[in-house]
Image (spheres, rainbow, N blue to C red):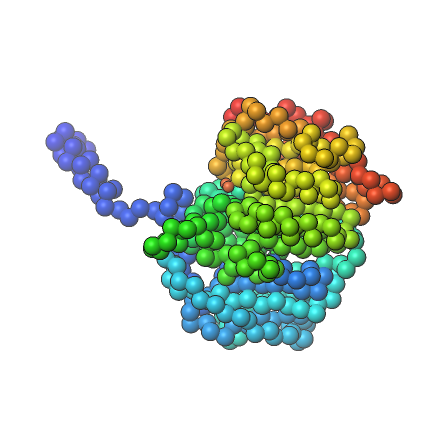
Amino acid sequence: MHVSFARWRSRMAGGLVLAALLPALPGATGVDLDPRPTRQPDRIMLTWSGDPATTQAVTWRTDASVTEAVAELAVATAGPGFRDSVTTVAATTSALETESGLAHYHSVVFTDLRPNTRYVYRVGDGAEHWSEWIQFRTASDTPEPFSFIYVGDAQNEIFSMWSRAIREAYAEAPRARFIIHAGDLVNRAHRDLEWHEWFAAGGWIHRMVPGIPVPGNHEYDPLPDSPDDADVLARQWRHQFTLPPHEIPALDETAYVIDYQGVRIIGLNTLTHIEEQAAWLETVLADNPNHWTVVTFHFPIFSAARGRDNEALRAAWKPLFDRYRVDLVLQGHDHAYGRGHNLPVGVNQRDPEAGTVYVVSVSGPKMYRLSPEADWMDRAAEDTQLYQVIDVTPDLLTYRAMTVTGELYDSFQIVRGADGVKRFMDGARRLGPERRGGE
Ligand SMILES: [Fe+2]
Ligand SMILES: [Fe+2]
């Protein structure tokens, strides 16, 4: 059909006006998720506030019409018969108002569980609205081999672009016992849609494999519509995660210790109370019966990207990592990958093949360039989304960094000798060239 130039121009102009009137898609994600709560449980999350051998915390969200929520628990059976022997536990409920509306968050801590046992649970309103039955396993109460996952910043385009990272991690290590999230889970601390994306991306994993999250700088912002411009922890954090308390209230559920089958996991908060945490850190490092010690936090002790050195943090905490021979430090923030060990700063000079291993990693799509001055790294990458799988036995720690396309990118082992002395073995030399310069 022939269209005159005048009519064509008027059609185009009309189209432009129409485009301008269309509502914008939420955020920069291009993803149309509805973050409003309903009676149906969502954002179901496993964490620990106590001993992983005998307790398990679960937290979930509904709308405000659910005032008496419950969790049901049974020892899992191969048949459906477990439903005849469930224990019902009443939830603690708290309210949170965000731009998604008024939500109720419900929290249950299952206690007196049997170690090394598969359980099945569901959460709901006690009537018609329930989650599916979901399985988890308690930790053994003795050192036994297991695997865990560690990821750096998810942060941006979480549903659109982080999904493949968390799902690949699960596909690679489906029996991982927990997932460490080293801060910057979201980009804007209090923005409810971003937390909704985090659960949309990995929610069926978060409800099966417990999370060990620590906050990053993007979990701290001034509250929206508040005259006070002080940074505060994401308002969702303590509602949706049930993590250990701290003697300093500002550190509640952001700095804590979890012992898992011979490994002490220490989560730290790099946003506040650095000196006070050093004193506390010394107490939990000095009195530590575990074979392995893993510390996780957000701002790195050694940075991989330009202009991001954290000198005060290094001065406060690294001498303790050295003195108490921390094995592995898992960090985020730099939106690049770097791994180095036995660093020539401080007092950790006991053995040329040993020493704390420091890692910075990123799982989301935001990427920074590596710093040319960052010479501490034995293996580095830029423009690469990664996840890490760590296998632990009483005498061997095996670390693998994997790209989201399934390529082994970095690896090392730490061997613990009969005398307790540890040796570091670098596996990266056998791997391909480093990903630098935007490959
Ligand atoms: Fe970040
Ligand atoms: Fe950060």
